[in-house]
Image (tube, rainbow, N blue to C red):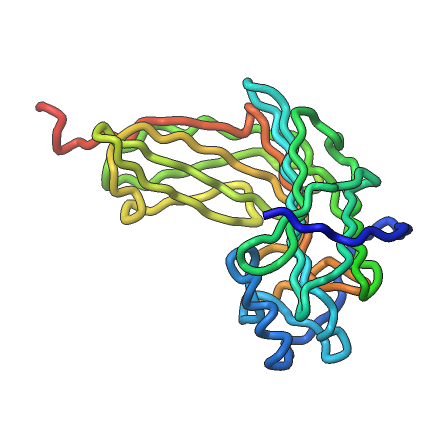
Length: 265
């Protein structure tokens, strides 16, 4: 579904990495709007800090930039989600002065601006400045593109083993996301994931329940860590979370998960 949004002239200050202090309070009316965004980003719960009373009328903004350099080519994906009660009648979005004109209605109910490019738009270390205009005013955020880093190739494991994954530090990264998929011989699969501020991840034997080929990647992320009491980094006439993620071919790893019970003696 496409949505026609009224456009207005736009001027916005470059976002900074500051995070506004927002104690965990919210009225029932605003909490309802935030719950609509729960499938994209955490809602008003123990995991994040909700806005102050005077910010309750401001829209919630959840935005992300993902840049990849892989064998198949470079890629940039941008998604900006905005919800309020009522929904904004004005929704103008740009990242580092690159306007995003592709606007749709998202599920949960909100406005979504998306951008897909077969190119690297922002280099490692460059700050991506999010700028969002609604009828409430101007909201901004800024985070750098994390630097390139490499993953240490993990050793093969067997069912019942612990899987260790290690990687080098990425410049400007606040935390890392490890994502793995194990594909079995019969077409079945399981997904493993972990988020950490460190440079290693440990997957316990109880998590590795399928033998097969494992493909994994580690993403370096700049932005608020998704943990208890996390402050948002969107400031101005809006509140929410903006992250910038990066990975490339050096961030990938693969291994075999063996079923030792089926290995002949």
